[in-house]
Image (spheres, rainbow, N blue to C red):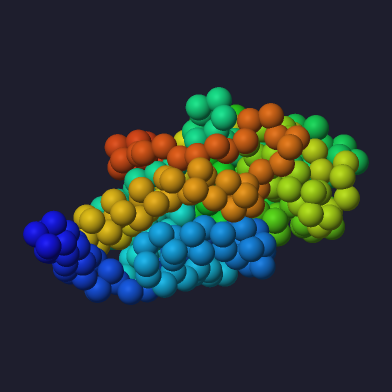
Length: 306
C-alpha cells in the first residue's frame, strides 16, 4: 500500500506539472512556411511534420502559408504565428521587423555534415545565354525581396563579385513572386534568366519541378552559382516561454528518426540526391549576423540609387 501511495503521488505531481506547462496557454501552435513552391506542395510536404508535432506535443498544430515571404514574416512579427521555417534573409527580415525579437534554433544538416546551399541563375538551355555577361540587356527575375537565394545573395554578389548592378546590367529587373514562378517564367519565355537555388546539381528548385512533371527535363540550365549560403533557421517568437521553444525544438530535432518516411517527404528526399538532408543542427542568432548586415547593405544601396 505504501508503494502504491508513493507511486500515485508521483503520478499526481507529474500530471500537475504537465497541466501547468506551456500547453495550457498555447493549445494551438502555428508554424509558417515560405512561398518557395506552390501552396498545395508546401502543405503536402509539411503535413507529416505537423501531424508528428501535434502527437508529440499534445497540442493542435496548424500550417500557415502566405502568398509571399513577407506575409510569413509579418505574421511572426504580429504574434499571429509562433514558429516559422525561414530562409537566412527572411530570418534577417524578421529579426529587423521585431527589433531582434526572434529566436533561431535549428537549421537543416546534410549527410556530409554541411548546412548550406547555393543561389543560382538559370535560363532556357536553348536561349544562347551561357553566363551573366550574355544576359546583359535581357529580362531577369529575382524571386522575392525577402528571399536569400532568390534575391539578397545574387544581388549582393552581382555587385560585389561580378562587378555590375543588376538594374544597369539587365534590360529589365523584376520579381517573379516565388522560385517556381521564376523557373516557369524562364521556361515560358517571360524571363530570360531567373534567380533560384539548389543544394547540388541533382537537387534544386528546377530539378524538383522536373521530378514533379511541372516542366520537361532538359529545358533549364544553370549559368551562375553563388558561394555557399548558410541554410535558414526554424525561428520562434522571442516572447514565447523558454520551455515551449525548447520542447518544440527538441521535437523537430527528433523528427527524422521518429518518422523517417515523413521526414523524407518533408525534406524532398530522392534516391538520386548524393547529399540529402539527414537532420537538423542547433544554431543561434550569431550565425546569421552577416545576413542581417548584407540585407542592410542592400537596403542602403537601393535607397541611394547609386
